Amino acid sequence: MKLKKALFIIIFMPLVIWSQQEFHVFPPNHSTTPGMPSGNGSLQKPWDLQTALDQLSNTVDGGDTIWLHEGVYSGRYISSLGSSNAKKKIVVDAYQNQKVVLNGNVASKRGSVLEVRGSHVSFRNIEITFIGEFARKQGEKGFEIVNGLNHVSGVNCEFINLKIHNNPGSGLGSWKRTGGTLIYGCTIFNNGYFSTKRGSGVGMYIQNESNAIRMVKNNIIFNNYYKGVQVWSASKKAKTSYVKNVTLKNNVIFNNGLPGKQFRDNIIVATDDRNGINIAKNIKIIENIIYHNTDIKSFQNSGHGTSLSLGYRASAPLEAIEVINNVFIGRNYALRFVNAKDLIFKNNTVYTAYLHFNKSALNNISKWKFDNNTYFTKNKVPFRVAGSKDYSLNDWKAQHVIESKSSWQHLKEFNLRNVLTVKQNEYDSSKFTAVLFEKNGANVSVDLSKFDLKKNQTYDVLNISNGEVLFTGRLSESKIISMPIGTLNNTNSNFGVFEIKFDKAVEKKMSFLTRWLKWLF
Image 1 (cartoon, one colour):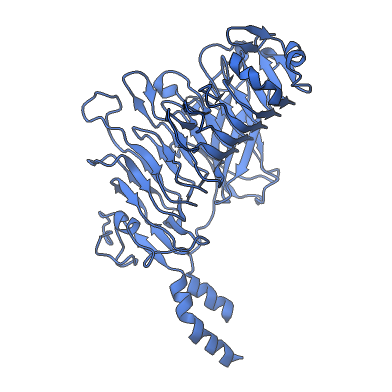
Image 2: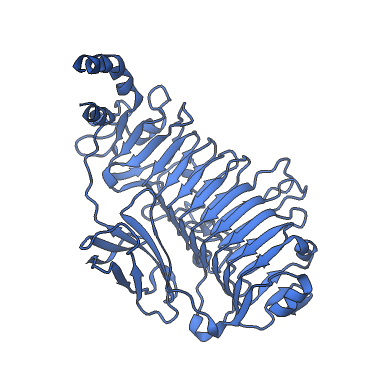
C-alpha cells in the first residue's frame, strides 16, 4: 500500500503542483514587501497590481488565485487575464478578507478605474472608487468622466461582493460582448456627475448579445446621479440585437437620481433603435425591491419617482418580459409601460399615484398577462392611458380582460411586512442583507432563526455605504435582532437597508498541495 502511494506521488506530484497556484499582490508603497513589476508573484516578491493583471495564461490560468493584500492601489487598471480552461476561473480576491481599495483619482487618460477584457475571471471583495477631492461638474477645472468598472469583452466572468462608489461616471458597465456574466452581491452607489443638463451616470449599464443569461443578483444599487439599472442601448440604427437575455433577481434598488436633484428610473428596460432590430427581449425582473423616498404617513404621492420603465421607442417594442414578485414603491408614475409586445406582470405589490400606459402600448395588451397584483394608489382611477382616459381597476379589468385576481386599495391602507427580505450571501456565509420597512419608523425585529447561526454569536450591524458599525450584539436564543431604521443614506425613516456581519475566524488557507497530501495520508 505504501509503495502504491509513493508511486502515486511520484507520478502525479508535478501535475498537482502545476495545476493550482496562488500569487500575491501588494501596493507599491508597502513598507516591507512592495509590489513591483519585477516581482514573481510570491509573498516574498509580490507583483504590483497592473503586472498581475497583465499575466498570460501560461503563468496565471484557470484554477489559480491572485491575492490582493490590504491597502490602497492608486491607478486605473486594465485586466487582460484569461483562463484557457472554460471550466476553471482565475480568481482575483482580497487576501483574508482584508480591505482592498482601487483609487482611480489619479492623472490618467483611461476612462475606468478597472477595465476588464478577459474571459473566465472572477473578481471578488474589492472596492472601486475615487478618494479625495475631484471635480464632479462638467465644465469645472479638472473634470473628467471616469467609470468605476467596465467589462468590455470576455465571457463567463464574475463580479462578486464588490463595492463601487463615488466615481465621476457610471458604476458598472456590463457590455454586449461579455456573455455569461454574473454580477452578485455588489454595492453600487453615489456614482455620477452633473452634466450641463442634469445628473448623469448610472449605477449599472447592461447589454448582452449572447444567448447566455446575464445574471444580476442580490445587489444593492442606490443614490446614483442618474438612473439605477439601464438594460438599454441608445444606438438609433442597430444592425444586431444586443439587449437581451438578462435576469435581475433579489436586488434592492432605491433613490437613484437623488444626488442629481431629481428622482429617476430605478430600472429602465428599452432601446432607442429605429430599425426595429435591437429589441430588448427575454428580460426577467424577479423578486426585487424597488423604492423611492415616499412619505407613507401623509397618504400623498406626488413628484417624480419612477421605479420601473418598460419600453421607449415605438419601433422597438419589448419582447418576452417577465416582472414577477417585486415590490415597487414610487411617487407619480412608479410604473411606466411605454411599449411591449408580450409582457408578464404578476404577484407584484405597487405603491404609486398612477400607472402610466402609452396609448400605443395598448395595441399589444391582448398578449399581456397581468394578475395577482396588489395596487395602492391615491386615486380610484389609477390606470392612466396618456392623452386618453383614467380607469379604475374594475373598469380596466372589463376593458382589457386582465388582472382578474388583482386588487386595489387606497394609499391610507398601505402596509407591508416589516422585513421585506433578509438574505445570506452565497459567497460569504457570515454576511447578511436586511431590507426593512416600517411606515411609522419604529424598530423592526429581524428573525434569523432559519439560518445556521449559533446562540451567542457576535455580530455587527453596518451602514451599507461606509461600513460604519451602527451597533454590535450577541445573538440570543430566539435569534431575533431589534433594528432601528433611521434615515441613513438619505432614505425616509420608513425604509432601510443594512448589512449584518457575524464574526468569522479567518482560517489560514492551506495550499492545494497541503490539502491533497493531508487527504492522501
